[in-house]
Image (cartoon, rainbow, N blue to C red; front, top):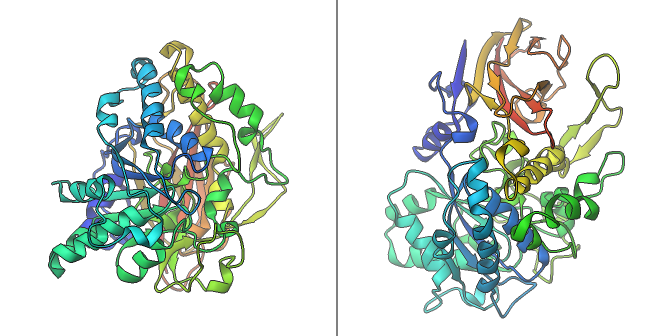
Length: 490
């Protein structure tokens, strides 16, 4: 039995309180293509100017503003910038975007007008942490969150936090002060928070006071941050795509005013980007399921022990407290990268094996860096001079049910490339995303259009996750994915 499940359907099921267990997934055989899936809506909270990485992240975000519905961008404080906010820096980068928007539209539809984005920029209180929460502490930023929650929109509202969370905390404080319990629960159920560590003391307050709020964070010292995988230099792999030379050549210089707005690295490249990268419709990301993994990393739902979250590491003087309840937080992947084969089979697995929470993010790094570089090309070049990602005829999750020990075949389905590029296929198991945690080898070459697998022998129902990565041979090479979930019955 095979079914397809689109990401939009997943969001609707979650908002309705329906279980997202793989055994319940049902959807149309004609889910929308990944590149045209319903956009996730998001509010950005940024302590821009505390560190150049917020400006870097904003440049990248604007290149994807046709794939993510940016409802508000709020200039906030953080522990690194406690007494001022800088909305003018947001406006400056949007103005640079305005100069390249026409060319972006030649390469892909849906880019919003700069005037629309500028109207959604606002400022939060220029105060640190929890002191900006309470009676009389409303701001343009906190009101923007409340207005968005009040809109008639079935989509969840993601709050992507690049700095402190006190603007969100104020919005939540006001909701609790003005709404009855049932309506408060309804509003909270629509919120999804992904914050880059705790950059003020309001994050733990939020988690303590709103125990049902969907919340992704790597609490504690910054060494505990999954987000660090975006710029971590890993011994044993090629780190070229995060080098300063790569950034200068592919992003900053010669790509018009938006690329010129991308500042040099000071402490770490784009530490905030993972807070929204997992919302992109690429066939891999499933925002409602952080435990399935994607471009923003992978997270599991549990209450971490304080001793395990680098409590004595650098936090910018934000206190590290015991977590009051379960949250979506660090998970661990084990991964062996693949290498191109010079002769014979076109890909081969590396002998190196990496394990850790940051592996869940950097394992996709070359793919999303190539995607970034391609979109920078879109700022200045005609479509025939640019690369564009492959497209699947039938997108969404493919679900299969098999018996223990049974052999089965997974088919890639129909794919096309807008530029007529040749496509390469790569299949691999993702055991951490399913219930069956043991490695499961393919019974055929991993670069075929279809692959054969023998299901493990199980004594109770288990789920297996497989990922198909389809990559074109354009410059830079671009990848899209399809996820296969196999339910194995005893």
